Image (cartoon, rainbow, N blue to C red; front, top):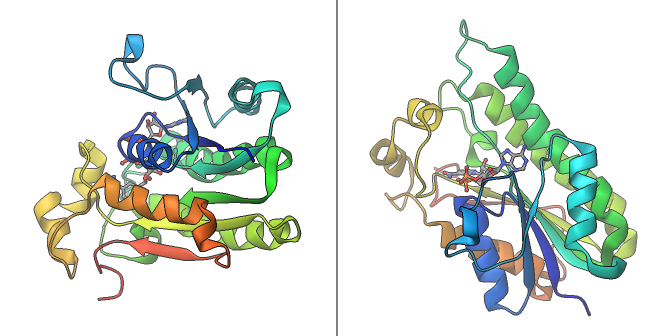
Length: 239
Ligand SMILES: NC(=O)c1ccc[n+]([C@@H]2O[C@H](COP(=O)([O-])OP(=O)(O)OC[C@H]3O[C@@H](n4cnc5c(N)ncnc54)[C@H](O)[C@@H]3O)[C@@H](O)[C@H]2O)c1
């Protein structure tokens, strides 16, 4: 049985935590991310890394080919590559709009297209969504939120299409997680303190708390769970 799992955005904050958690359970994560996403010389980065730009089909195909040795199967894929750019009404920037859809939605579809035949029957795909897809208080995040809400629908349709092969597809939707905030993220969320106050648990989450749930969905411990969106948000959306 193969243990290899491709993690897109694997050089990012949550992606790294996912690689670490999967490795802890005996999986073999391969991080796939933009060039430069991990430090030169791989300082402190312990997993195989392949360069992948999810906005480009040739790049995705090349990266998948080098992540998979001798056409061997994959245990799963984690679609974690994602970007947020603010999109306030009156300030809409076409390039930001296009990039969010290209990375967050179309990128996922490209990665699935390139890997679906390689995923072993009974394998698992985890898509990383966001609370923003299920919430309306982050003013300026409308387009990002639309892409992340789209991931919930994408997940359901993909789950139904791949179910005959026993492949499960789930969406893990994090709340605000401790990571360096981009200016866009700070602008739409109001910062860590404001974000913490939205949660029942009155704090933001840790990348490891997302990774734990991702590992559960990759593993056979969640063998009868598919087509689901699970918010890992400390109780923001339910409140
Ligand atoms: N941090 C949060 O609070 C939070 C909350 C909800 C959802 N998310 C989602 O979690 C995922 C990871 O976010 P993060 O906080 O670790 O951010 P991050 O910026 O640290 O990681 C995102 C990774 O995606 C990669 N990426 C961007 N464009 C890419 C492309 N074209 N091709 C391949 N890789 C690309 C980046 O290089 C980066 O390594 C994203 O999908 C994000 O939308 C994050």
